[in-house]
Amino acid sequence: MKKSAFLLFMATILLCSCIGRSGKAQGDSETTGDGDIVPIEVKYATGFTVSDSTDCRLVNIGKDRFALVRNLDTQVPEGYTKVLVPISSTICMTALQLSNFTILNAHDVVKGITGTKNLFNRDILQRVNDGKIVKIGMEGEFDPELVLAAKPDVIFISPSKRGGYDAIKQTGITLVPHLGYRELDPLGQAEWIKLVGMFIGKEKEANELFNGIEQRYNNLKEKVAGCESFPTVFSGEMHYGNWHAVGGKNYLAQIFRDAGAVYVIDDDETAGEDLEFEKMYDLAANADYWRILNSFQGDFSYDALKASEPRNALFKAFKDKKVIYCNMKKQPYYEIMPVEPDILLKDLVAIFHPEMVEANYQPKYYRLLK
Image (cartoon, rainbow, N blue to C red; front, side):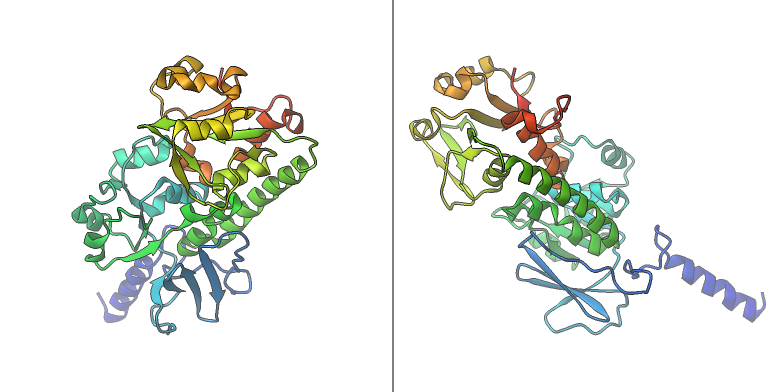
C-alpha cells in the first residue's frame, strides 16, 4: 500500500472511532443552528446551577463543580472537574436517575444499574438480559469489577447515609451527584432531566420535554386553585410500630396542595418523623382522604388494610372508602413518576376534584381503592 493511501486509511479509521452512536463526533455537545451551545435555564430545581462560557459549560451540583467541555484541551476554572461531553456510557444508581434516561430515550447510554427489583421497563430488562447493562450490586455493596466492566465515562450517584462509594472512588471514574430526590417541588425534581440532557448531548430534547411537563402541570394547578372547597388528606401506614409521616414542606405535601387538597400536617419539616398511632389519629381521624403507596403482594383491599392494623378502620377515610392507593408491585411508580409530575397531579385531581378532568380519564398511578 502506498504511503499516501495508508495515511488516508488510518485517518479514516481514527475519524470513525471518534464518531458516537448519534453520528456526532464524541465531545461535541448539542448546539443550535449557529453553533452556540443550547441554553439551559433552571427554573425550579434547587440542587444544580448552570452557567455557560465560550469554551465550556459550568455546572454546580451541591458542593461539586463540573466543567462540561467539547475538547479535553479546553482550560477550565480551578476547582472544576473536567468532563468531555456528550458522554456515551454511565451507571445509574437509582430509579429516579434512570427515569431521566428513559424519558430522554437514552437507554443506550446506561451501561450499569444497581438491580431490577420492581423494574417494569421492557427495554431495560432486555438490555440486562442481553448483557448490555450490568447489575453492579446494591448501594453499599457495589462490585468494583462489574463497575469497571461497564466502562462508564461518569457514574451518577445518589449521596445518602449508606453511600458505599469508597470502592468506586478508587476506580478514578468521575462521580456526578444526582440530587433530584432532595427537591421539594415536583417540577424541581422533574427538571433534573436538563442536567442529564447536558451530559448526554440532549439539551434540546430535555428543554422541550420539560416545557411540556411544566405547562400541563401549571395549567391544571391554576385551574384547581379556583375550586370553592378543598378536602383534607393524610398519608402512610403503620410499619414496625410507627407511622412515618412526611413533613408539611415535603414533595408529597406540595403535590397534595397543588392538586387542591389540604395535607393534615402543616409544619416546616421537609422529611418527616415517626409517629405513634395515637398521634397520627389525632391529626387525621376526620380527614377526607387517605393516601397509601406500598408493595403489596396480591390485591390490596380494605380488609387487608384492617388486618395490618385493626385501628385503621377507625379513620373516617376508611369508613367512607376514600383510600387513594398505588401498588408498586403493579405500577412503575419510582421508575418513571419523577418525570411525570403532571400525570401524578392529574391522578390526584381526578380524585379530589373529578369535575376538573375529563369524565373518561384513566389514572396511571393513583385511584380510589375498591
